[in-house]
Image 1 (cartoon, rainbow, N blue to C red):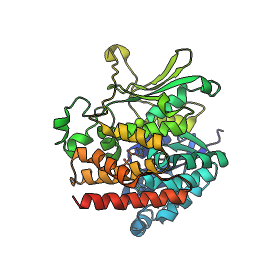
Image 2: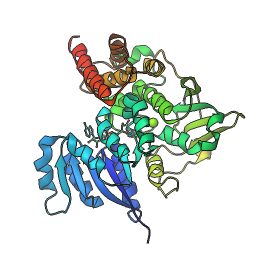
Image 3: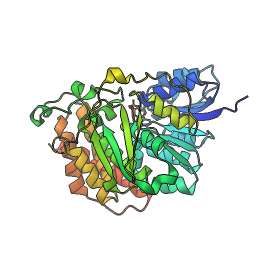
Image 4: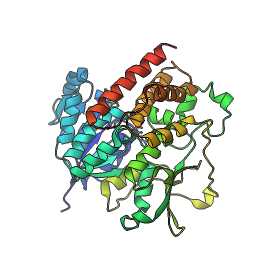
Length: 386
Ligand code: NAD
Ligand code: MG
């Protein structure tokens, strides 16, 4: 008999959540489910909790508690709600936690999982952007394991051999370039919500789809990569690769470049975070190289995509500046999704807030939470005043 690994999935109703559920169902002989969580979608949460036989289900919004309890009636699944319940769910003894909440809202539960030494499959890149040095220090202190789920970082993780760490020359982070890769700046002014949500290669949640369209996603990933891998900021290069087949590459000191390739299907990196150091079968579409024919690469355009420049600046200056970048971006993206600001205003707003608020030395997690809350208030005020 194989001993099953237990898994908790945070943000189970989202895009990464759904792909994780797909793998857990296909490999029910290998994984059992401890906790599943969602923000407000009670019915989707209750359904998936029943399907997976989870021990507990947590809804982030406390006003949804009774609905969740009703939806789980007749099952043995424990129901709870609210921010503290999310943290308690992360403290439950599961071997693996898939962190797939969107935004800085995922930070507290992810830290709780890290503090009990769990393996965390990290999709929620905003947490590393906001609190990277403190979060990786907690990982070391509690002997936790952080496995990247983001496809680019999973690619790097897969081709990076520990014994070769001091022989890395460059990390080449690939970017699809999003739906506006070839659009002139003048046309980008009038981009609609629907156009920005329509990613050419990946099906994802709304926030990361907009981040991909502004290329802030690659900016966040640059910061994420710096926290995850032992390289200097200037060793991480962004390369636009429209097909999203090469998920990223590592160049070593002898000139060898190792890449990980695959179809754009998040189940592959999620499965790796679950099964590492082993591999499990995933029925993702296989690459047909003769049909693909050619793969293209180009330099990113930081004029049309200033988010790339802003993220690099945040990484270089450090301190709380990445927290500011992230918080301002979350608020600006939410405003764009409500048609309150134009597409180019997203990066403009982030830039304004970065220069207005500036950076402080990063000393504690409480400071991250305060700084994140303050940036959100300031950004909302700034958007309300225009
Ligand atoms: P999504 O919007 O589809 O899902 C987000 C999930 O988080 C949902 O289950 C939602 O209920 C939950 N959630 C949202 N706000 C919450 C809150 N305040 N408190 C508690 N729960 C909350 O997002 P997604 O596309 O699945 O992305 C999730 C994370 O993974 C993001 O950080 C994203 O950048 C990262 N990521 C996603 C993809 C992808 O293909 N979708 C790829 C790489 C990385
Ligand atoms: Mg990615």
